[in-house]
Image (cartoon, rainbow, N blue to C red; front, top):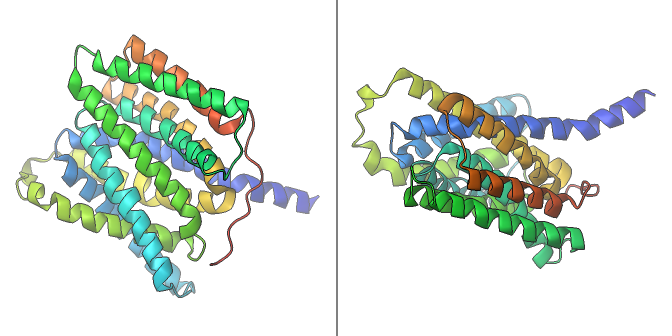
Length: 316
């Protein structure tokens, strides 16, 4: 009896950690929007991931003091660093640029819904997973929903073309995150999640710092309100350091397909936070597009059920 309970806990724990990740990410959209309204998007990205990298470095140092001293090979370090360039630097260039043009509620729908769709599409095209009628129908439905959503963005009388441009940048962010998720399998083949997350976040944050330095020099730092700094601290620690670490652990434990499915929690949390704290909402056309996109994405990724059991990759 005890062994059955223990086995169930082991199977459930990764999904609980992933749910925590999605709650943090969902709340991070509206919090990041608050910061972007006061600081250049390149500076916001640097603050968020620079702070996140610092928190992870401290955690890594403490873990080593506790006895975790596994040596990292140059290949493992290079893989994690490369993942950081894609999943932190490039992703956030598009994401925060988009956030400066479009509402946070758009990003909280496009990025977490399109990322699993793109991940699944890649796995199907490369024949790493099998195609089925349900998946093809889901991808087609999702594509139709995305078109409706973007048409609704362009037709928004209050924002016009700026909102559409921001939404397209969110789509590019989703492409980067899908690639980042797929790369996690190789990155985690030879390195523990905390090290992988730390190296990836640090490498991306350094590039963001170089990119954002000219804009940072022009900021009137003494005029930045205190509540903005509170949001900076939150997104650096919660949606960045903690959430990214838990996501990497989720990829290791349940695989990229199952981990990406959990991202469907993010739009619900993100929409609720955007409406509650920012007063944002969808237009009618966008709401219809978001609903169709979400239905198609769930069908494409899950096929009406969850992926099979994942076996973590052995060290390369």
